Image (cartoon, rainbow, N blue to C red; front, side):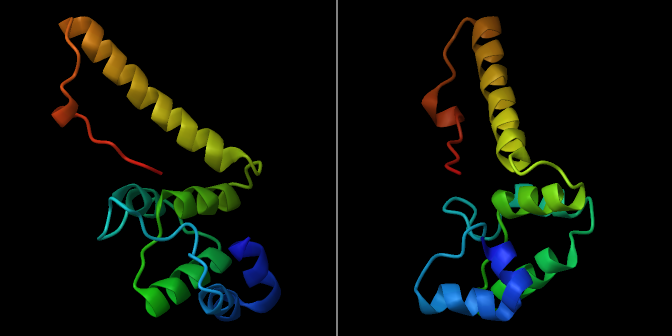
Length: 124
């Protein structure tokens, strides 16, 4: 939604509109990654997002200090490669499934449950 609004009225006005309504700016900040989402940083370093994404990122970071999260990075990736609209969700879900499979494989190979304190829970 922010991307479409930015294309119509510019990033500054779109972000200001969200902030004036006291709405969270979706795709920025993360409850567990207070200093920035490392997944987003790693992904965004691999390609040059479209100007609208760069503009939004700059405006949000300057106004709020919040860094983009993985949702922003996947949306930017989708725009860069002209992927279908559902691509961010599919890519995110695929990554999550790979992690679950890795946990299962480890538990099967060790014949032990992974202790709770060894599992990092990430809410996205």
